[in-house]
Amino acid sequence: LSDRHLLDEVKRLAARERDVTVELIAHLAEVEERGLHHAEGFDSMFLYCRQILLLSEHAAYGRIEAARAARKFPIILEMLAEGSLNLTTVGLVGRHLTRDNYREVLAAAKARSKREVEELVARLHPQPDVPSSIRKLPEVKPVVAPGALLPASAPTPAPSALPAPAVLPPAPPRPQVVTPLAPDRYKVQFTVSAKTCEKLRLAQDLLRHAIPDGDAGAIFDRALTVLLEDLARKKLAATDRPRPSRGTAPGSRHIPAEVKRKVWIRDGGRCAFVGKGGRRCDQRAFLEFHHVEPYAVGGEATVSNVELRCRVHNRYEAEIFFGPHGSS
Image (cartoon, rainbow, N blue to C red):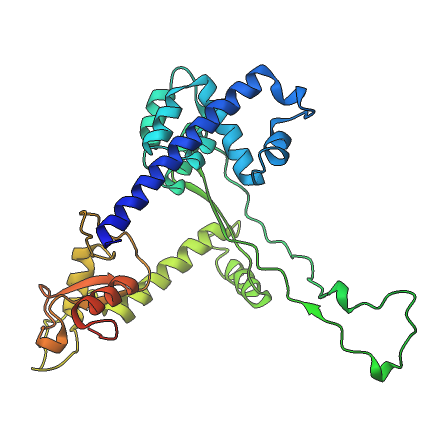
């Protein structure tokens, strides 16, 4: 397959998958409406989907939620088929839809990311602020692999002959949580070390005059403000009194601080790569300063010739220009 044919085929298959999923959801809605899963020996649609349709727990839950929402608002099936909504979005907004708001809410949720839809839900159903809290997590004890234990009937070998028990790796850390609660209000939850917790407590004590209740959110905001200012100085040479650039010596790869500042502001701190279909990359992490005309062929470190690129697209453009092992 050519590149173009491959991409077209992927799009066709994705569209077909959406059509099949919509058909399944419509049928599940009718199965539940008729109570056919009861006749098959199941007291819930979830168990029916898990054991008869062999869907994963996540897939079963998402399709059942969509089926129930689509039974009330059939337009959901049309939007799922065209790809303007997905199952995650339907699961988030479905329980908040009413006869009065469903058209407006579904239109606002079209083609939105999960985070954007969560913010939409927070506007529809605001939650109160969560109180700041610090809680010590239970100690994680190493788990001995079952295979390392001897059967009860086996003779007890000498201690020196016993192999060291296999210790299973610790469970992965809990994911960080950033959840919209209401317009302009978020719940942020993460795990820190004892040293970091002690730093927080010390900051609370030192800031009692400004933050009497020791609110961790307010301290977190202050700390981030200072951190961002420090990062701007280090990465972009940001300053309240920028000096005119002295320019770049001929043949130098150095990008002046003034150029970096202007490029960063112009590109909005985001990868400026634009794909063939006109879509701009939305990556904001691991950004690099990219020479549009490569430095190796005489490209200068000027505002007009330097753009922000994420690491992936910087490497991609280097491979396009120089080949798989080239660099810009």
